[in-house]
Image (tube, rainbow, N blue to C red; front, side, top):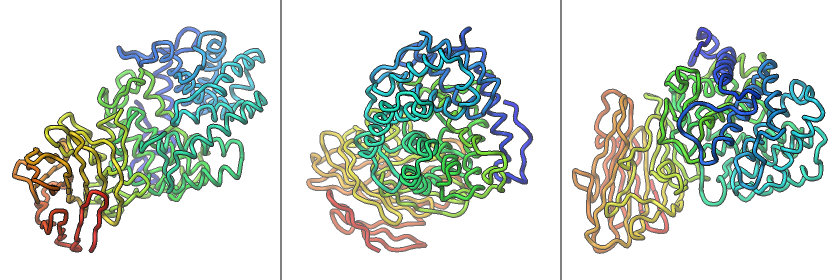
Length: 561
């Protein structure tokens, strides 16, 4: 991908400016064009993999997600091509929007693109094409959505249709229904779970916040903007901390192949004026993520986004991932809707949270502890509240980071009787420098766990309840990777191999862990000492910090300094 020279005056941390985002968008659009069908209604990107929805649906996905990029780029030449494809698509090429089917997802991208390019695309269509397009989109107003972020796709379609005078009553009902549904999943402090349960991941940013805020903004609805904009602003206080100093987003959750779609909520805050972040920090975080992926092979030799994280990587895919799925990364170009003279483009870049200071950030809604260190710019997420067993291991591990990925050997796990299962995760709270939860392990065994952190060092403790005496227990730490140092040391109840066995009652196991990119770190046991003071109690003595007394019971965790 050809990009302009870096500008280290305006962007001392990334070198990227608006010109780099424009060039990246232009390159991505040019690369997909050869894969359009003759009528331009479908984009069949190369590759052996199809999603579970089939080739036709995958082709529609290719059209819709790259149209979104052309719309955000406001590229008139490209939009003329997509206008031809729209005319063909709604004349019988595209599959109908039916209950819980993929076209409902893609309809939202098409509708949003049409709304933000109305003078350039919709207004230039023949009236007959507009009528057919409205009819095709109209099925989204009554189609049943999966009970998750999908509830917002009819909202987005309805917002467009009502803006052009189509289906006003059905649109109003679809908007009210979808917005009412997501209220059930708002858990406070700017966080949603993506449907029932405790599914916390990037869908908070690129779906649960994105669509309601965009709808309120485009509809100029002050009441909704106050509500959803306020939630977005609060979310960004935590969200900004999920990026490492190298630009990497946290490697957790599903649909990670959308890559720099993680930047969408950052831009959204600036676009709507609902952000706590300075403009220079917003651009630094967003440009850092774009640069991170472009520098690490996200785009192949043909200029196409691959199915993966850096390069191709089947580990981050789901059954719904088709050849064009990565192009939801188009959402990351939302910042191009801001004019070139907007302060988010003209301000000098400012460091992100991971670059400013060491930090331990407790996030109570998902029951997470974020641990970042300025010496290496790494961010670690200690997960004591997010779970979606359909997508293990990207939800159920104890910890994630901006530099590691879940391994097949069950990193960051407690393995009971040879089984790494961690289900029915229940939060037990977060505090200053700690987070705790309980879960079900092998054979119905209950485990209460707590992590305490300071600097790059972690104390991980587990109380195993209900296991047969003599049951094996093993603790694992961070997955190894080049350029980082991992460490795992026994502290209580574990041998040198980080293994132990349960006793006749509750059994306590404690280990010290660390993930760092510092070249020659001192051993973790020089930073902290742990002493068992009872069946459910232990003391943590930080060499350069407080002494903490911890009581780890099945129902409650108490940390006292």
